Length: 235
Image 1: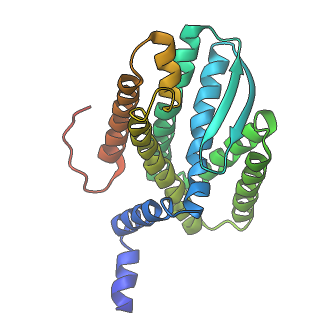
Image 2: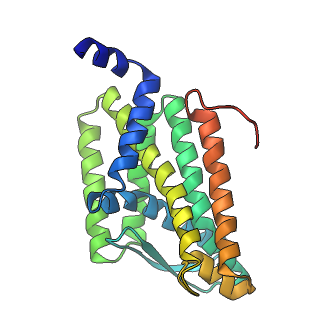
């Protein structure tokens, strides 16, 4: 049995799917899962922030909440700017997951972890203002800096794979959640509700559009980086 386990662990395809499956289980655990999924929430909110910066809007603050949700408070944007800002979060998180797997495939796992730490520090210094969000971000940075100090390439490849898996699973899962929430009442679907209020289209349609965009990016991620994934070339 020990020989079999050692052989499997030396198989990169097995390690890839093992990490993906464990991540899928852990991020849906009742308590710890919520805190882990905040990594994707931070990236999601960063998508709003970067889009707001592009349009010249003022970002007041980001709140990262213990239920794994987040808030970005922005002012100075017109209605059409608000539509693009609200739309950016989910696709951006999916795109960052794609970028993460690209870095892993090209042996830049160490760089991927550094980028995530830098993003967290950037958000912490400039935008995160609620107590829980500040504490969570400090702990994330401290944990990663400790690992950076005691650098081992194997550890960083595993850590990078975990982060990419968290972003990938959480991004598509959040898009599905948004779609289901859109049927629970007007104003319950977060970004989709904001957009629907401005352009006067049912929030269910907006949520479905966000889901489709996120799903297409997720499919492209699987096609390009998941070992033995069927190549249908839909994109």
